[in-house]
Length: 158
Image (cartoon, rainbow, N blue to C red; front, top):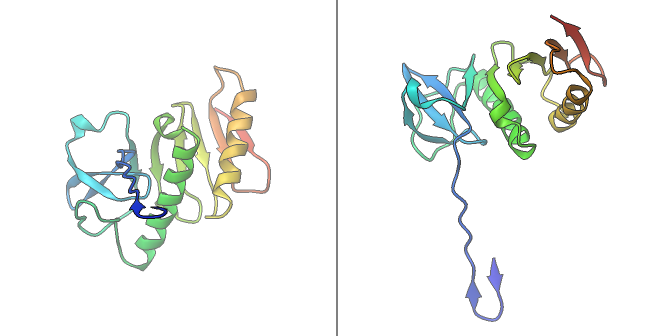
């Protein structure tokens, strides 16, 4: 941004690893916008979200992941999910995001719940509802939290 009368301030924010994805037999670490940060090994993926069900093109470091038409839509949805998880500080509580069904992706949360997200709309609102419901559940509760049916969270025990 520009500081008048004669200076410019440039702020740089380093990307941080949030997730990883397998591409052509290699594991790649990505940030919350699905920008490829580096190749990695399975021993270095602890604490990162595993992305399943997306076939991305071979990434280049510093570039956003790309894919064919359907895969590009999946990647855009994944980026939206990762961004909203990061905004809420939830990224370390999610184990994997499964995009095999792009109209109803799922993710694991707190190692106790499978969350069915539904269509790529109102992801921020859906995650806020999820947090509200999880607060009300007991520590021993496990099961499926379905956010894809209507404006409510449907919980199925087990």
